Image 1: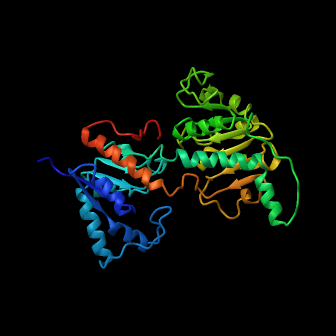
Image 2 (image 1 turned 60 degrees about the horizontal axis):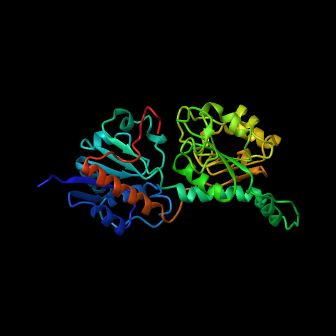
Image 3 (image 1 turned 180 degrees about the vertical axis):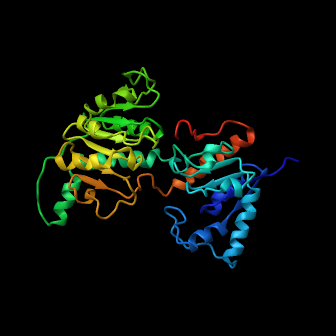
Length: 356
């Protein structure tokens, strides 16, 4: 009989989700670490975005709960976790071979022993955010095109201030980063009749989307020609992972290259944009506006100038949020479990040399 593969789930899931995981194979021995949840709850940490219910009931003391956690981790081969993974996880889980994250990015872990040692695979949930974030991006562009931030301010002031909205049809959108999210944004934008430009790390020369194999993109740009792309855009969508290369990818020079009416939408990570440079550009009217779901730092401090700018729309890192989030994450995890048991390549393996 094949040896059991021990799986530890250390974040809130529903009973149905647990059954889906266990149903992948009878080779799996799945432990739901509710003890871990109670420890997190006692420390005042959120269990998971969207999960606000109290910690599961339990009578054990904190020391007993810790003992359960350590015992399970000591036998664990596969870990399903959010991106907040303990720095000493390899010592606490010596048999660990794979960590599946429920986040799209692994930037918090890139300098960790877990990723750098190569002793265990780390995979992300990249791809499951495409639908909600794609809708967020379209919503943000529509909000600026139809002047909704201005209208909301007028409503707060009890003031009737007519203005002339614009249209998305015929406008040009540039997408920095053509992964799963970028491709979905491109598809939706084309549906609105927009001209779509995009750049990706592997693009070596300027080419049509068809030549580059991207049917939802009109023209592809190599990374070295970002400023040329920006100069043509009415909207710019930042959708690259945060790496050493992409930190401050959009800085003074890039912002200067943009049209004075252009709007930038950041759903990637705050540090991809040089935030002080962005504030200067917004205050000076060098660009038309910004929709920011991510900032640097997070949460955005109350004294940040961004809060008071009329041409800025801020949301608290919720663009990927949806009631279907964990359903999609578990579906991806189950697919990867099948691949793992069959000895097939896993989806979304983090490459420390690439940075994501």
